[in-house]
Length: 173
Image (cartoon, rainbow, N blue to C red):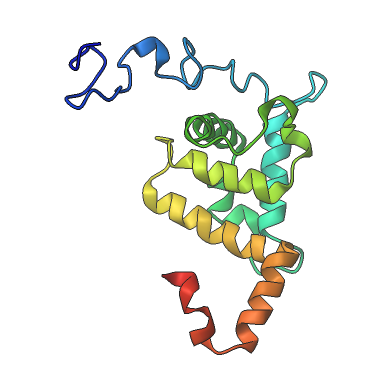
């Protein structure tokens, strides 16, 4: 074997192929290809699925008794149906790098709304429809809603409030 092969660096270590056909999640498939996420598990009989998802997310982010009036907030702009679709397509870029979901069994219409909102925030990072500041604003809406709806986060928050801050210094650094 030669030390300097075409696909090896100076130390003889293999290096990633620059072959464009292998740039996607699967060999020969572009990472944004609908083959990875053809329909997000949306049943064919479902009408206006992205409108339904938009309503679910906005309701999740503005619980009953909330002082926010959804039509008057940025939520409707960020989480409108066309953006939801775009953000989920953007999420596919992230999924290629870190596959958190099991796509063959994933059903977007049945998933926890908090997960859906998080997926939209991740996908928004890849979108040209919103700015980085908009993504941070979206996250500022999603984080408290997750804390309220999660028993684990709620118990951690209660525990953190009852102990001195120096007990939790390792969490931030």
